[in-house]
Length: 176
Image (cartoon, rainbow, N blue to C red):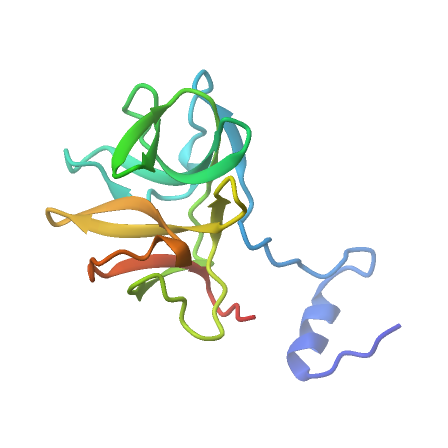
């Protein structure tokens, strides 16, 4: 049996029943809830709080990832008050999505970190929101449009001439 290496490990190990494995960190893409256009959004005890509110100021907005044509997975916003609830930022527009998608529950383990120009802060690992058909990684992002937070996507390959700052989701205290 491996010996704990510091006081914190000793306390954690002492408080955990011996037949239970140590707690695991979520994967880089987070733990997801599988949905599609015909499935109701789970209750708040499953989704966590919304990442922002829609333009009406009262409708919750969550983040997730949408399967596109079985060749890519794109970050999306999920608005339970909309039909369909899943909307994908694609080609500079918000596209309604009627297929498979998943919701990333909001937890205290996620923080939104300001970034610019597709740069990822050194030593940080963002929450992966998907990938392009060529394999380029996409990450969950929040930007402001007319003063309102709007979920979107970013990636190193998506840098444009715009210097608009965005916030990218990162697991708290998780570095490469």
